[in-house]
Image (tube, rainbow, N blue to C red; front, side, top):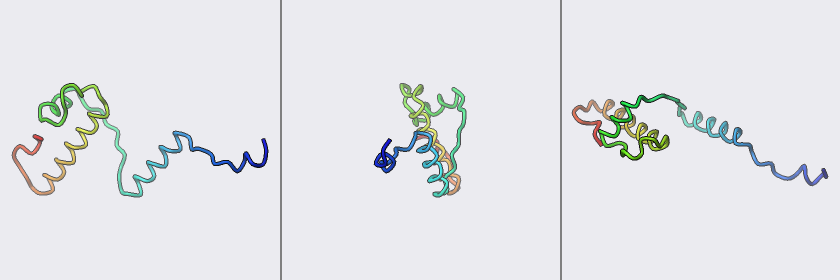
Length: 88
């Protein structure tokens, strides 16, 4: 190894990138949450129109639908809304 090799920029590992993203989320006031959804809840997301039937096995699509649903629930609760708020 030569002196020039030591000066080459190192690419961060995937783990280091995950930690950076987590720290940035914390700085922005976000909280990282892991949760388990029952199949019946996924079916409810489909029934309410938050998720299409063909996406029910796609973890990213289910997570996006869940985030949308909970964001909508938060806004409605904050504004004192009622009725069919859960239907997209």
